[in-house]
Length: 109
Image (cartoon, rainbow, N blue to C red; front, side, top):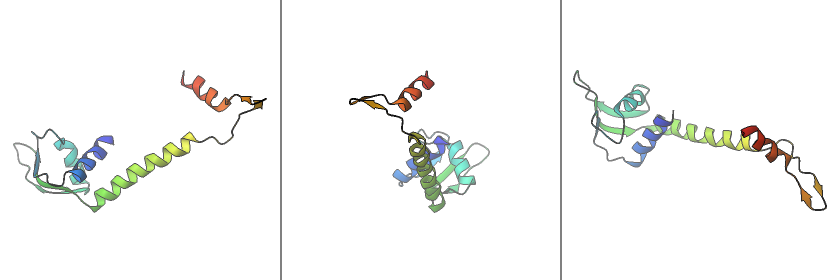
């Protein structure tokens, strides 16, 4: 999934790209082909028996919407998982232990 997001981000930043083929180093043509077949990018299909090739590759509105959904869902998942439902921080004379952080640290090991 990250390869699709990276490819769409690259296309969004580089709107002057003239072609993508098997010799392209910036974008893997196989990933672009999947995006093209799913309607997330526009291009002129110049594929032949000798190889894959696309002219004037551009991200379209469906691709931009999908990219926004992917980036916002990761942000929401990260913020929800990092918050604690119950905050356990007992104090004694100004000193305390954060049991939630202690539990997370032992669970990672």
